[in-house]
Length: 205
Image (cartoon, rainbow, N blue to C red):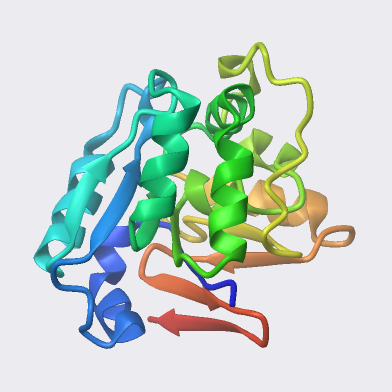
């Protein structure tokens, strides 16, 4: 069964993640994909997310999808227990997922039951499309991206960092522009969404 844990700031919902896994992840392995942050000048959240996973007892295996072979990507995604995709530029992330074929391998594993942990850009990229992210991220960071079609693992559109500096204004612009046409779900830095086949549950404050 498909299961996703989506957040704006993973380190700030670490306790919710611990409840989500029931404290039963010590020694398990997580594929850690930080590709979205490569084009960002601010990326402290990558290390914060890594440390939060390690505090929960997970073994973190970093996967650079831009340089790994397709076989290496497929093998790590298949072998590990969790998939974590950190924040950064959503358009660049999708470009690299598409161009390397990692998108297909990732979707296949999540649909087969590997829990997906998506932070910020990692939460938006699983939506039906990512065009709405243009208020938050710069599309020109992904000059080779031919389509804004997302991974389609969910049927709604997360709006991360809702009400939180420095993205509060961008999040409000998304809500004002697309609220009438898209199934938007705002998410603050201290909230997470647990998604499975039966529900979308918002947890945290």
